[in-house]
Amino acid sequence: MEIEKIIGEDEGVDDESSDDIDDSVYDRAVELEFTLLPIARPVANTYSFNELETNKLAELFNATSFFKESAPTAVVSHIETEQQLGPVMSKLFEAQFHRVIQMSKSITTFNSINESDKITLIKGSALDMFNMRTVPYYSRTNQTWTIILLTAIVLFNPDRPNLEHKEFVKLQQNTYMYLLQRYLAVRYQSQTESTLKFLKLLNCLKDLKVLSENLRLSMENKDPDHVPPLMKEILNINEKKSDNTYDGCMGATVTTNNIIVF
Image (cartoon, rainbow, N blue to C red; front, top):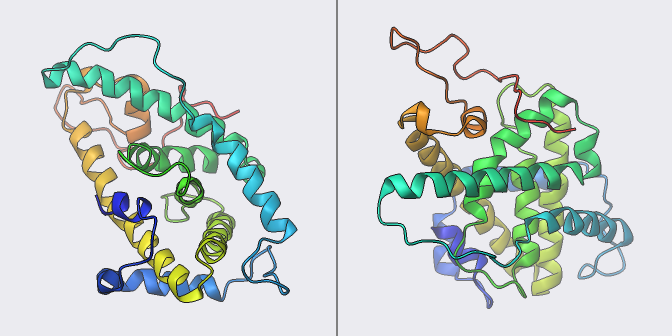
């Protein structure tokens, strides 16, 4: 996946790949540039963080600490069939989902959102975060902040369906996109290089969306009896009726019993 390449880069930026950036990414970057953000741009030094930026980054760093995994305590048996893989992937996904909840609850602005929007954002971002966090390689020394900020950008996605406070969510996403811009500017000490890197990362999020949708469709096509209850709710996989039709709430925001945010 392209995001692996972008996150894994330690040195400069390949200018030849800039033509691959989708036009909508440029539009989003321009929109962000003219959005009023609650974090003022530093005046004295463009390539250092101000106090407000530092505090926001520190909160996010502490929140994403829930994604740190401890060393395995048991030997995992060799998987040879899809039937053996299914239960293992389900457990990994559910464990990741609970980390998403813990992480989200540690972000101040997320806690100010109503319950319905919280559930919508968590359910909508679960697959994206699962895929993003399974990137086989990235440098924990050099790319940790990149993936942390992308995590917040994915969480606060104003395009999730049925959000009641879309503009507030959009403001939060813009804030973390701005912080990603600032981080890249501080890291690369070059406005040109950091801007291109930022655009390429946003472009990767479009690929992430496609990957997550493909995974959702794959799970949807499986026998519902083989999909754990929590995963059914996250992915909006409904049980088939006896007449082989789906109930009328397909695609709607589901009030859940298993997903508890508070």
